[in-house]
Structure formats: C-alpha cells, structure tokens
Amino acid sequence: MNSEEEKYMLRCIRLAQNGLCNAAPNPMVGAVIVCDGRIIGEGYHVRCGEAHAEVNAIRSVKDPSLLKRSTIYVSLEPCSHYGKTPPCADLIIEKQIPRIVIGCQDPFSKVAGRGIQKLKEAGREVIVGILEAECRQLIRRFVTFHTLQRPYITLKWAESADGYIDLARTDGQPVILSSPWTSMLVHKRRAEHSAILVGTHTARLDNPSLNVRHWYGRPPVRIVLDRKLTLSPDLHLFDGSVPTLVFTESPHAPLPHVEYIPISDYHRDLLPKIMHTLYMRGLQSLLVEGGSRTLQSFIDAGLWDEIFVEESPLLLHSGVKTPEFKAEQPFITEHAFGRNFRHYTTFPLPNHA
Image 1: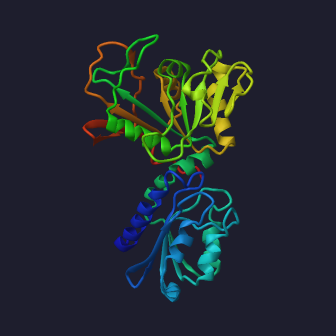
Image 2 (image 1 turned 135 degrees about the vertical axis):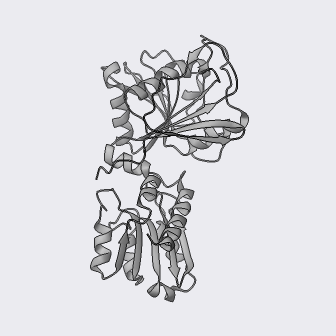
C-alpha cells in the first residue's frame, strides 16, 4: 500500500469527523486535493442539505488551473445522482481532475458503484480501497441504517466499582456515578445521536430531560417506553421542548410535540416496532441510556452496535445490578477525566452489500 495515499486518506477521515453532529442522515465524508505533493484544497460535508466534501474541497483551491493535474482523495465514493445537491462525480469531471482516490464504495443504492463507473467512463484514473476498513467504519451509522434497515444502536451506562448502576429505590434522587466532566461527555454523545431512549422506570424516578444542555448541539428525538401510560404528563420528557415518541399499549391523545405510538403485542413487537419507526422516520442512530431492564432487553435481542460503560470508583454494596453482558468481541479501555471507560463494538461490520 502506498503510504502517501494512506496519509492523504487519513486526512480525509479526520476532516470528515467534524461532521459527526450535523451531517446525518448523510454520511460523514472528507476530501483532500493534492498537486505536486502538496495539499491545495480540502473540505468535509458540514451539514445535511449543504455542499458535499468534494464541492467544499474544490471551492477551497485558490488556483483552479491546478485541478487539471491534481488528485482528489475522498473517503467515500462521489455521488452520481441528484439529491439536495448536484452529483459530485459530475463536478469532478467538469473540473477535469484526472485522478480520483476513493476510500470505500457507497452502500447507498442510488450510488453503489455508479459514481465510480461514471468517473471511469469519463476517462479518469480511479483507485478504490485506500484505508477501506477505516473509511467504512467512519460511516458505520450510515452503513447500518441502509443495510440492516434500523438505526445504529449505542448502549450507555455508568456502574459502581462493585457492579451496580443505582440503588434499589421507589423514589428519591438517583445515585450520581458520573463526575461533572463525564456528564459533559454524556451530553456530547447525545448530540451525536438522532434519538435517545429510556424506559418507564428511569423516566419516572429520574425525571430526565435528555437534552444537551452541557454541550453545544442538536438535542436528539426523545423516546419513552410507557406500556400502561403511568407516567405523569408533568415530567420533563413531556415539556414539548423536543419532539418525543411514546411507545405504549393504549392509544392516547397527543400532547404538544409528543406522539403516542400504540403497539398491540407490546412484549413481542416493542423493539421491532421501535426499529421500524425510527428507520421510516430517517433517524439513523439511537442512544439507549436505561434503565437496567431496558438495556438488558436490547442486549438479549442482539440489538446493539456499541456499548460504553463508565467505571466509577464508588461502592454501592447493593442495588440495581448492571446489565448482564458476555462480550465475544474484545473491548477497548479508555481513560478520560480520571475515569476508565470500556468500549465494546461489533465492528468491523460484515460487508452486507
């Protein structure tokens, strides 16, 4: 593998990551333009509906005449169809860029190799597969959504040093296992997801807002499980500040910005119904924050792609046990703000295409 090619593709990946909070439901993409061994332009897909990475990279080039003897590196196959913006493959051809290096093919059915074919038919040199696994992992949410027809699912919890996530309680304040700094990381993770979900018990006892008040970003759509409609309408979840979906057994008149979705066979159809609803609404990623029973239901169903566990030094001695989880995949231990985090992932994804 050409180390120069990898160097520029790695730069594409790092640029693309800047679009994590705003590019969805489009994939994160980065592009770099190189002429005579020097980067002359670069860009990334900043926000859905706005210019793609290739467009931003081309616009950033101060001397457009250099494009005719340059190489454009892009982490994902350039699009070949008209969406909210014109095809990037057509722009590359129009600007007479002779060489295109691509990280991975687009899994989206409207692209899926058509951009590569269009560039080759225009007589361009096209190389595909530079840092392919890394580029595919970059768009893992997009890949999961379009290949498995469900959102990319992240489970998150904090646990005590002796394996509990809370005290056994019917009221009162929850035990705070996260520090102020790690709570900020939780809000950052919320801003990176399209939707966030909690169960009835957590909604009732903790009265969470599930917003991103400790981080800059767009709050995720809130999802609440309330089988018997026992939750008070005075909870923060029903304040109308963020669109909220409630999955229940019984019909209910909607509240402002709150939609009730009835499920006839709640036990059997709940998770499939949630997956289908989020997919049909284009919500590409889901963060599940609890409680223990809800997290366990996702684990038992095999519905997860990543799991983040914050390890607190506190001892609770009794209470609500952490979800039972046997990891077949190796996990990564990360250290931040004085805490250890275990990160499990199902990646690399199988190639479903």
